[in-house]
Image (cartoon, rainbow, N blue to C red; front, side):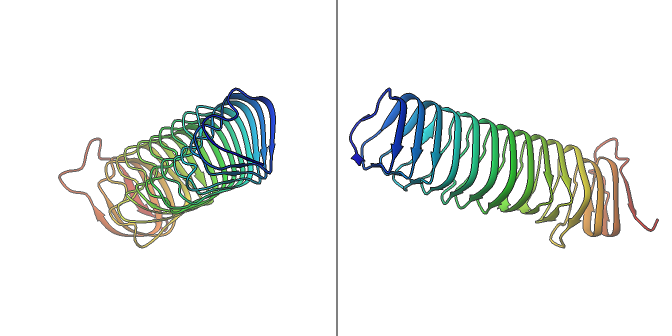
Length: 276
């Protein structure tokens, strides 16, 4: 079955779409509730807005179906391919499993209460901007500027290759992950990394209450911890440390330590090697 045009299924309730193609037009399903979508193809713009309670599985959102899911809640999505940008805006209570997004530009903006298992995010900028209450297990992304201005986030088993990740965040913990990001975590509060491998220049600066437990810092991690309040336990070597504000930094070995006239009070961070 194929549908197109303007709002062909406006104000639909208790509706099942199975093997349906939305060919063109705008706002195919809007102001609706209790919607099941399976084995479908969306091509028209803005197909699912103001939906209250819906399931999406084995479905594809083509490039043309931009801004497909906005202002909706109580979504369960699995085994779905999203090629369209600007998905998930102003939404809450989202559960995603085995989802791939090939253009993650401006995805998950101002969303809350998100549970994700196995998500692939490719390309695009600023995914998860201003979102909160997020739990993720399994994430691969090369999108730029991920997780900025987020709150209350827990991430497990991620591979994040980006720049400027986790800026201006609050209450974020990342476990068992690989993160390659220039200027990682700047201007954040309550940022914690556990058993993570961290790469990228000038990481983890200007942070209040930064914690690293059993982490590895790549040789690219130079000038780390500037003006941060930090408790860091690092396995192996730290290339260089610059002007941490307070706390303690412990590593097996530490290269250059820069403590100059620009350091900020209280300027009492303890920096030592484990042998000491």
